[in-house]
Amino acid sequence: MAWTWRFEKSDGTEVEPAVAPEEFTTQGDAESWIGEVWKDLLEGGADQVHLFDDGKKIYGPMSLHADAS
Image 1 (cartoon, rainbow, N blue to C red):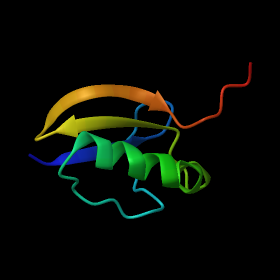
Image 2: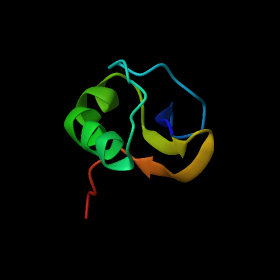
Image 3: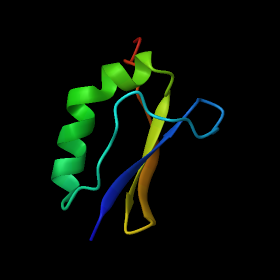
């Protein structure tokens, strides 16, 4: 199993991430990584992400923007 992220602008256009991702062996590892680098990804032009497991979408889009409320 390979857990991967897709990085997008808010309109759904795929973008290259500012921080090179890897393929993760567990969902927890993938989510820990995004928790560590989300600010760098946001500053690099990504607005949202999707999580995939072996090409199957698990969830997303998930915004990288902090909740303003």
